View 1 (spheres, each protein chain N blue to C red):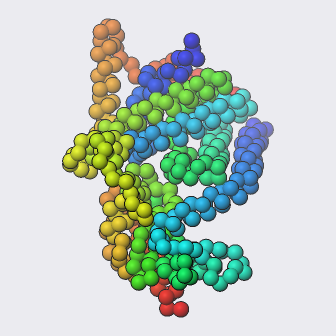
View 2 (cartoon, each protein chain N blue to C red):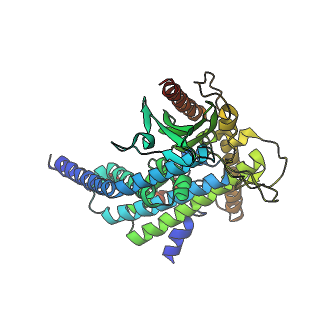
View 3 (spheres, helix red, strand yellow):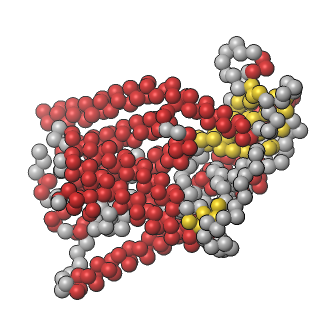
Length: 206
Length: 223
């Protein structure tokens, strides 16, 4: 009996100290983590929106001016992009889908004709080398040189994302043509982009 | 001298992947390219260092009956803290490259295995050395596997094209290819050891079957 008590106390102490350390680090890093996430989002928005974009409505605080506000429809955040003259030229929709290792966050750029410009995955925890085939973009490089530098506004290729979405109309897609070895991850991207397209459709109707 | 031994043993004589057969799950899943292997190796080495050090410091305070749950809690806390710190302060590029390996480490059996087999019985400095050695050995084995698989599957190395026009050989990109390449590695390693033992006129004995390394009988009388 005494032994059990001793075991419980020592395991409890380890857990308590661990929980305390986690709470402390969580508290301290909360601000910087949010800032880092925001920086990632800003970089991502630049990638999926057209080059002519001058301002992006990305303010999600209460009481922000109407033309700076993020539009939220069914949990999907729509970031509107305006050109220098103040006309709306594109929308970037941020949506997420459930993947193999957690949520897969995507950004879908949609131009004013309702066609998808690019789809990028901003954060995920899929298995490197397998699931990442459906999410990550990587440049083609050769030790023999000859690789051409990316033009401005051009993204490193991902055959799955580019082939399925680039230039297509922003309506929910039906067929899931996944990447072999990355079924869960491609389904996650598919679901997230479909959510984005549905939200975009509702936004256009209003 | 013995410190060097702890450091070097992980790289070859007790390589976690090729000899101890620890961490097979990340080995098979993440060794599809040399870059992935390197990322996973670095991330694991860092966590292994921290957890070995922490566990060797508290080893005398933890009753042996609850040591495994305690180690798991310590390792999980450590990994989660590393993940939060990386999210907050690491450059975005580094976080994107290494961050995806972190969730894979929490349940990595190399980390728990070394905690149980080494850090819980040795001092802080020796455990640190063991962590570095095991981490390096894991990284090197993973990179050898990853390099071979990446080259065979697409003719590339570290995402740079080496042989233009190499046909895409998908088998090696998938876990099945990992099993094949790993099996070849193990066969070469074992062949080498058996031959060496024959030359010396002894019988080859895998280290994990050796009584000197196993503490199960000795540990029966709990503290």
